[in-house]
Image (cartoon, rainbow, N blue to C red):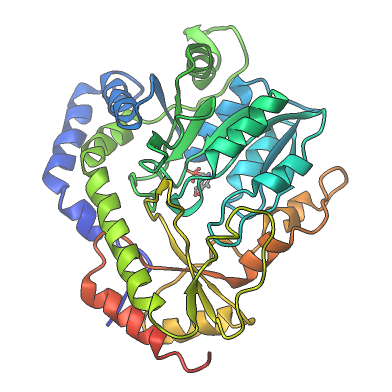
Length: 392
Ligand SMILES: Cc1ncc(COP(=O)(O)O)c(C=O)c1O
């Protein structure tokens, strides 16, 4: 039985008539840039996240860039972000001329380690960008407390977590703003690139709107230097169809994750990460004999499982992945190299000392298929194959 890492075809096929209608609406209107379809989608997003403003943009990356620009982050500033994440977060910080300062991550929930963040704050620090990795929010209360004590902005990178929540508060709604990606593999996956900036801050929203259209309120009259960060009207119209199904998509992912965890946790050599140590900054190695660690969902979170990510200990991750591949099971490594070890940051002014947990995660993590249309028999095939893994 074949189990791809991701299959979007059933999800999108099921919506084809509605998607066609959305396409035809935009096609017939000839309003391809901004306009009512974009406004309507932004209203749906704002209502979904429970925020005042939602601004559709060209990608999740551009949403981060726009947030940094709107907050005036610039050369000479430092921004603390995780090292174990996708490149966009740190890349955008570098693109505005600021320095990404990398902090370590919790090896159980994969979130930015607040205690490590604390150690990295200097007089140049302007912001913290926690990433709600794999669909689970970072520990926002301690992060906000720390940020407030030092007068720092918090930009939530919610690229993978649109619909997740922390103590009942939506991803992206707690910091000064949040950024979202609609890259096709996300829980709300578009038909190409696009993203969103969400905020409750009126001034920030106004600045972001201005920067999204080259800093011009009135065409050809530029108040400030911005860029073209606009979402396409076609993309907004199609996503407007899919957002109505987002809760159902995330629920299916949650069910799939729960099924993996319940069946795998019963096996010997497989354990959940340590709840006692989670996010404490003090981590021990898993108990001897534990070969596979399951992802930990913290109690205060609604985790929407954009990824279901295991840790394979003992240097066996690549062998495990090859074994699954030989059984027609797709997997992915999110992420094989932490940011502080990327070639582009091995230059004067950017280099940083070791971050042991991030480095371990990059060596041990592997993500399993968890997409909404995964069938129970496909999941059973994945689970049984894992349970039969002899090279443990
Ligand atoms: C954590 C994180 N931040 C930012 C991005 C960037 O989003 P996009 O691919 O839409 O530019 C992604 C996308 O994969 C991501 O996973």
